[in-house]
Image 1: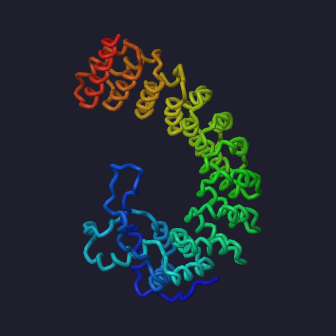
Image 2: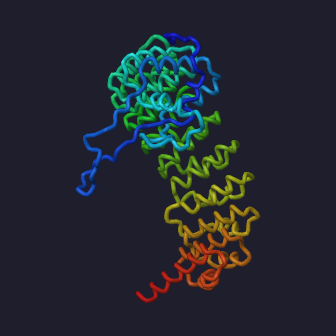
Image 3: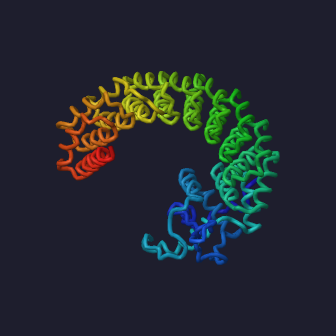
Length: 429
């Protein structure tokens, strides 16, 4: 397929319409099964038509002659609901922008005109990658059942570019009826189509895709393995854990990174071993992702490895490891390395350590927290007070009394609330 009527646009301003802000019609509150929830808009909706074929053709022509980076920015803005709402007065417009506002609003609405949809379907086969993406996104956002049907049919086109773009459109549409079409596309003869179909299945977040995506983790193409891993992370089904874990040792960095992030999103304790091993990965990005993912999994068995990661050569890894220690489930004892971080040279790590110690609420850390309060900067003092308030150990009361007179209002308030809660507990006893 080729793009129809690729003559220069009458106005280059069309390219920037979506960059100003993608408008979306005001959506009235959904009517819940609650008699107190009354919706004044029931049965009445403003008429907000999307672009017709002429508007779409002009937009496509403008994108075709634009700088590729500008084109990508414009396409990225499609569907973003930032900008003006309904018929509110456009207070954020600059001088003369109102002349373009109506056209921008129209292009930002879902396409329903059959002729416009036909033009976008044709554009799926453009030589211009950005136009294929624009057509796919606009079609996916259409919401018209016929558009989804045509996208599904396009997955069987002879041109691989069309099939790839059709899968991207279905990712935007997020229509569960396309599951089987996308699953079949995982066996496509062209790798880009397979990758996009895997991405689309992840966007559907359909648990039925766990098995076919899991099989794709063994693909020869590293980008396909990474995409399948990321898609499984989107689905968040624990059945994928055992298939993802070996990929943490993959020879390709991008695959390891995708697998680590996916295991974090799935939050299954069976992934802890793979993630703790990733804390020692040669790639910095993988180590950072592993330190963060272990906080999402929340397995207390990771405490020792996270404490060791606090000695990593990278500052962010150390901070993320300290933060994740505070997120572990039912961790009874704070690692000594976390307590020692209260005296670290990095001020952010000191604050994170205090906050994590408060989450763990280990009374053994109270003396170190109390000692660290003197001479600490305000944010650190606040974190210490919060930690002492969370720890049921009265050895921290002296600091709380001192903090209740702190010159910083937030610290005074937090300390006073903690002391009040303790006095109330005493009265209850």
